[in-house]
Length: 456
Image (cartoon, rainbow, N blue to C red; front, side):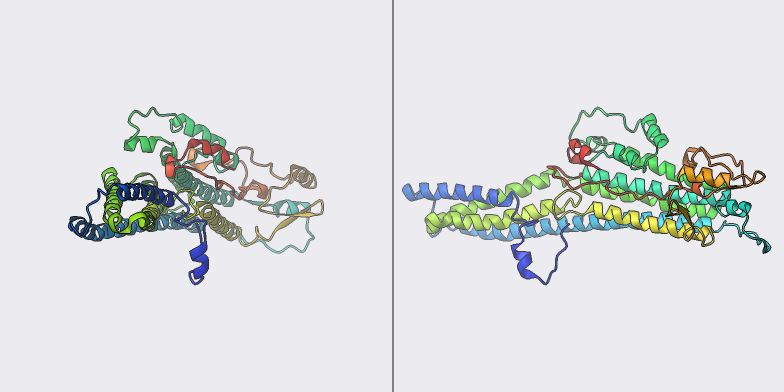
């Protein structure tokens, strides 16, 4: 998407990239000019066009035609711009919904954060036992942190699926490699049949549009995962029933927004309407040619070319902006918006980490080989081993949790210890580079599936 300074008139007028003139409109106008040249040359050698001074039918018809086609072009461009605006609003609403779900989930689990028990001050120096406990946290805190990090990941996964659908790309392997989609979730998608290829008979039906890519089915399953995550967290006491219902309502907003984006990206205007517009423009340019040839002569192709540029450029602008999710220069920059969503969700989760830990996790650091490692980073296993060996034999550091939490799939670790290592906290990954800008002949889900390999 091009962001420009509206006060810089010269740059707007002479910029070629993203211009409506940089497209098929000049070619169509040139073809009409060639047609006008043929008519003018033939009429110059063998006059066959009725002069306008002898027949006013052409002139009167052209006058009515001017008014009618002016209204049609105006309505066409206005409706296309309204659809472009709807696409921008829908993408913004998706961002707001994602931020609202994660922030609400973080805030709702805060209502059940237990207060840390006050311990009497000790005048003894720091012992090995205290050193071990300084790097342990309550299991309840770890489960809460796991809940809202998984909530963030699944919401981000849903948005990524929507944006991949807008670009017409598969992207499932890329999301798995980027740790947005876990191995078990990857297997569940294949097990439930969302990745099974569909046989499409009628290629001009809505079923063909929906089944061309598996994104709608993937988004449906991810919605289930989100709702399942909330229910399991509620059963484990991390969410109250009222807050869980509110969070479920917020999650239910995602499918409606996805449907809006999907319809804008994939459902074209009615065929008969598009056909009528193209026939109307062609008929008008033909009539205009025969009206001006008797008086303009061999200069007629120039006038036809300029007037054709006006009409065909307007039609080209309308066709480009009615679907704002393609790869044209004026389409919505989904990549930048996806990264912005990621940054917003990451900030929310980091803030919640700081809150549930009592303001300690963000400021605590470990010095390993002269390098400070914050709590956002997984401590190397060698340091864990050294740290455990320094503990006394009566107070051994609890071992790391081997099975990772996956609330929405029903697999949780047994509470074998009240305290767990800080390193067991879920790592906040930076999901970047999901989509790359490449050339494509199609737009929306109609883009070629061969572009899938270009997603990084």
